[in-house]
Structure formats: C-alpha cells, structure tokens
Length: 293
Image 1 (cartoon, rainbow, N blue to C red):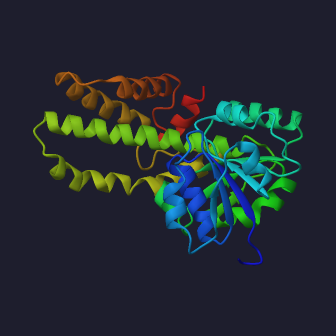
Image 2: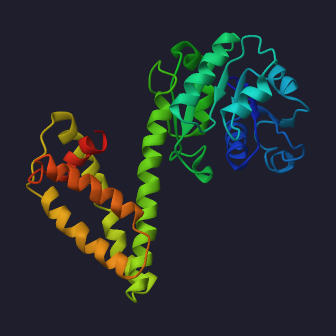
Image 3: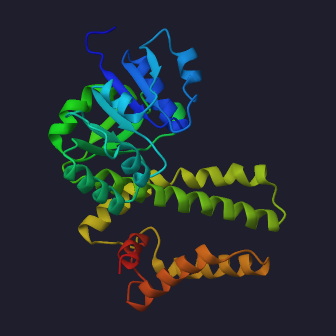
C-alpha cells in the first residue's frame, strides 16, 4: 500500500457512497464500508482488489474503529446523526457528504460539536461517474484544522476538492443555489419540450435549436455576477420591459394548449414587480434583486 494511504470508513452505500468508496480504493486507501442493509459491499469487494483493500463492517462502531477518517453519505443529516450517535470517534474526523440545506448543516455541526466530534460537512457537485476523476468536484466548509487533516484523503474524490472557509454551511449554500439553477433550468427545458410538442414540433427537431440556449448561460452568469456586485444593470443587450412583452406571448401560447403556467407565472410576477418599481429600462440582471425583495 502507498505510504500516504489511510484507513477510510464510508458510511452508506447508495450509488454515491459506492462511488466514494471506489474512488478511495482506487487511490490506494484501505476502505471499510458500512450500510444499514448488509451485503451491498459485495460489488466493491469483487471489483476493487487491485487497489486498496475493501472490507465490510458489521456496525458503525466497527467501521469507525477501523478508520483514520470517516466519510458519511446517507439519505439526510438526521440519518447521519442517528447512525453515529453514541459511537466513540476517539478524535477521528467525520466528513459528512450528505445532501442537506444550510439550516440542517448548521444543526448537525452544532450536534457534532456537542459530542466533541471533529466534523467537516461538504457537498458533492458531480454525478457518480465523475467521482475520482479530474471532473469530480466536492465543496467543503467548516473547521480549517479538520480540513487540513482530511484533505490528503479527500483529494481522491476529484480534481476540484475545495474548502470554502470556516462557516460549516457555506458548502451547502453553494450546493442549494446551484441546484436551484439546475432544477429551474431543467424544468424550463422540459416545459419547452411540452410547448414545442403541443405546436407539432418533434423533440429532436426542437433539440437542435434548444441546445444553443444552454450555451448562452456561462456568459450570462459571468456578466450578471459583475452587474449584481456593482449594482449597475445596463439595458444595452435586452431590457426588462422587452422581457415583459415576451413573457406575455409565451404565456398566451402555453395557456392556449392548457399547459401548466406555474413557472411562467412566477417569472411574469417578478418582471411586473420590476417594471412597477421603475426598472423597465434595466437589463435582466436587475431581476436578481427583485427575487430577493
């Protein structure tokens, strides 16, 4: 085994937990896994022998005792607290890569502190196939001392494993904001397919043009960020007033086909508020301040 290898415990063997355990093993670490339902480690035990060894623990306490670093990836923070409550960590750090909102993350961080558990929460931003590859991205936040201890092991998870500072909820804050973008963009795309189909446009025919819309987002994200930080929203490319006109046409077409208008209604309401507040001539970036109002 590599001289830099560590003993890593992975709690939870859902698809992401399996990907984490596999990445640690491929990096040469010895991995002990635990899952509420026994037997899910069989695939890992069979597929990873050429790398770091993988063993299945019969209990959480056994997995923790066998490790230098404990990594949890369960259904939610409540499950993490439940399965590790009463387990003696003996100074071993607990890295929690379970998805949760910032409020839950702060609650669990306080819970861990009350039990003297060296704790570091984080958020995984990439799907399971990307874990352990240069495209893998994991955000971490919390105690810098704990991060310094676990950073060498966590480098096995991807090309971008970033510590965002001492606030334990900061990684989660990035995660939920990015998921907000993903959820609304994905649902917007699917809603547009429904409208296109209602107008007799084949999905593949529509996709040839829809794919170009996604290509606009990177430039928009950068441009809007500069505008939001400066408070200056020039309407040189497009204005909220013109967006108000467009949204009326879109909504009319959607209603004509009896499709759901919920997402469009929310956008329309924000645009109307902006116009009512005198921002019709401003660029679309201004809407970020309207949603926050």
